[in-house]
Image (cartoon, rainbow, N blue to C red; front, side, top):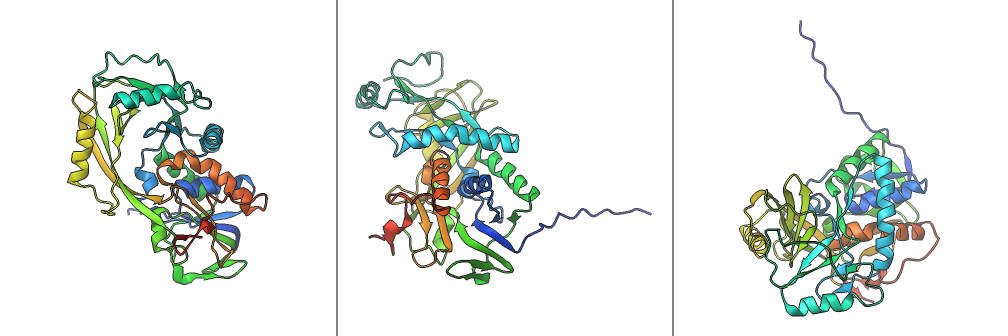
Length: 368
């Protein structure tokens, strides 16, 4: 007689009350949860493991420089020093590595770009990011280098897929996650607390990314979802150990694999890849790389960007029990750690939210 053994997934031991509920376990929700957990707060996450989350298809790059005019990114002198120590802490907790510091080689399209770059290397505040005399040798690389390149440091990438996967395992081990999509019909909002089914919390914080447009409490905010498509390619003869950039990025992953992207599209907001995106990415690759390559994977995701390029964090204008941590855009891995710490200081009454981040700067989608 054959005995069948059925393995049942452990049912979370959900409590009746939490300090906070976080909705969404993308990059924003994960990093915010870690900061609150460090402060000994009891925080439940609600997330249905949405496979199309932008955090799961993002390149995960961080870069302190805006290439268009060779300027430092907003508040980067706070973001950048906080980034490394933060990722070391979460790596230690999860016994994994996610952060991979690696310099960027910026290939110039015009003499003007070259001049702008090297003129900034001597300016105060730029020397820690821009290398005035790069020792990198690209003469043997299969790349087009007609005008030259500059090198940027304090850059790299975070393996967001692995980070989210490992942190979800951590949450499951602590019974701190509900694997479901939040049902707004079962959410009761009061001034000083929220009730979801049989669970109460002092505050619920939404970290839903582009799905915020479906949130009945925050959909009025000016989130501008932007679609991005990426390739993973295999190029056996490229053999580069730095990120290449020429109006797009080519990020080495190891084993001759490279992440390439990204496109920007505000009209088609589906999660499907397109022939137009594929052609765009191929043209970008071939504007720099001269060796053969194979497309291994083609992905698309929706980024939660904001028209003024500042995150949306704070609490609802009517209900203090409703919080928001969203709108991190394309620089999430760089800005989320510092910004989560800043938001936690606000939640715990230590300091106000800086006006440029506070969602109260807009009302009904218009500046106050």
